[in-house]
Image (cartoon, rainbow, N blue to C red; front, side, top):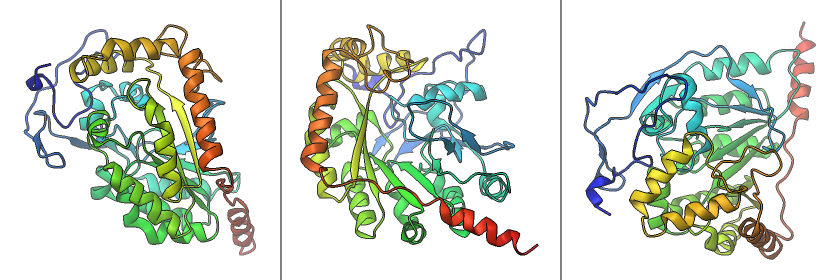
Length: 357
């Protein structure tokens, strides 16, 4: 491998054609950027934040095996650059590539708090937990600038509405007081994604995320303050992090996590091409092995859209992974469980407000 051929500080190494366009288009590179976190020169495309103005912010999740009914995303695209991210494909709906564009063209929904407040104030709204980051991380670097996630948490607290968070960024600790206030009434559950205990693996898989040490510290800080945390061992990628399942579960438990969950990687849509290009450049010695093992988990293909099967896979390698996770739960989380979120307080709030009229 020629190190100069790898774009430092990015996950994807190319822009794949948008499936909704008949021909690909070239984006001019106007800026230079340096990846300060890693101390290395990044690719020559500056991350750009673009404001968008959707009419709604909360989405109903139709997939029966996702484990959530409603999600919201303050940002589209994600600078974390996780190479395996299933959300990459959604960037194509906005006219961008699922590759490098996903990491450097971040769409910002500044009206999200207002849209959220308008929804949960409706008499017709039936209280149910809303998950922040159902698609892209609500605590990605853009949040340092725009603070949209913080404003949304203030709305959830004001209306006593349950919320879930999925993140792999320690920035959530900036909002610790808000999170603690929500947790006091069982109005929040946090899911922290930790895919490896190796910084070397983390840097190539998830180049702009918080370090593993910071994520484990985040789990401990949150749980020490009474905030329930589930650790997501997701995705498990054969021959990259599959050997770390038990150590990961042990570390999560020791840092106070209430539970763990996992998925097996699947590379739908454009992600298959992006991941294949990435692994041949960054891990050429094991590229074919990893790709073949992923295929063995999904009926001979890199992608898998079958409800009930796609998250857990099938075949011997998938069976080994799923058995290891079950063993890890029995060993480290036997007497632990994530509590249910409280939906009653918001319903009571609505009743109280109606009495004012």
